[in-house]
Length: 148
Image (tube, rainbow, N blue to C red; front, side, top):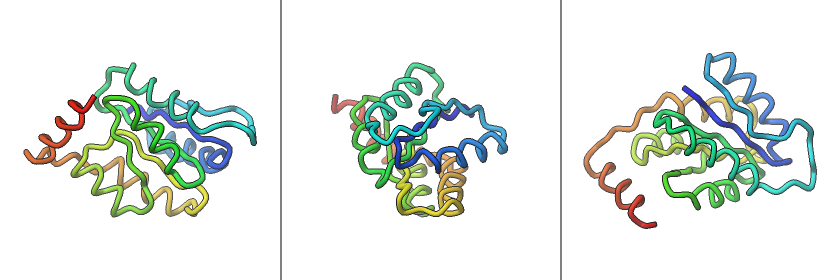
């Protein structure tokens, strides 16, 4: 599975650990973050990089992971693009639900409030939970795509 990863300054250090973990797990990882910490960067640029790359890939199985302080800014920015279903991964139960029910393709993580092990549990749950494809969930995703 191809995974695009991006983070602003608040998620910069957590991103480094995430990239290492994902590569160790055998994922095809594309780093859309800065090579050096830039304290004045803005989260929308990273959300844009990841979501545009994800959509341009044409790969229905590809995913994106974004990190910022609360995760909320990245989630708002990512969801501006049609075809993106970004979720806030504040715990593993939410991550499982958003994959099972919503077929989320972008996970936004609150770097300021997660410990490394918590982040890995959330990411692993999110990556390994399949979309249930229940008719009501398929219908709802179609409704989202038709919103514009």
